Image (tube, one colour):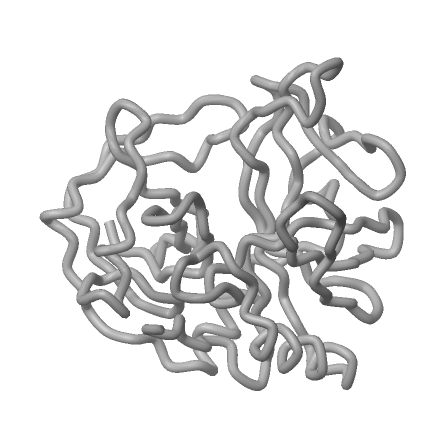
Length: 240
């Protein structure tokens, strides 16, 4: 299976998550490992591996392992992955445009529900998919949110014209070398381009289920996996 990587997100230090567009049919594919193992950062291009935004990869033989809402999961063997090429920026942008939807509900269906004021989630084990791309309606506001006693968080205010959300951003390119500390210089650059009206397509996803508070059941939370800008859609991850 050949995919072009368009989701590349941070996890705990030392690990990441990736997904791509099936180059043959435009479907979302998330390469996963058996037994809930996580992808190690040594597989990133900046560390000598094949994974990077815009990279066309041959995953070799894969095995579908769908479960609601993670219908995109496919088991693969990292040892068999081949890096084929880096997709040209204009082709990558066109591929994003072809699969992008105009609303969150077009992507995630009616199982997506509001939780609080500007957060959204799907109940554990429900939903038809966990990945998508949104062509947002209106301006986007990217910032680093800080609260006493908590680590800083990268947040994006985004609207589809019907639902307005304030979402966590896990785009690995917006964090430092530890993949934990926000890269404020790069965040300011992206925020400035968004504020200037540079067209963007937002790669969105649902988390694995977790409870946001002790009195709440686990849910799949809506988040921003990556921010793709038309003027540089294949911006690379820093090796720092």
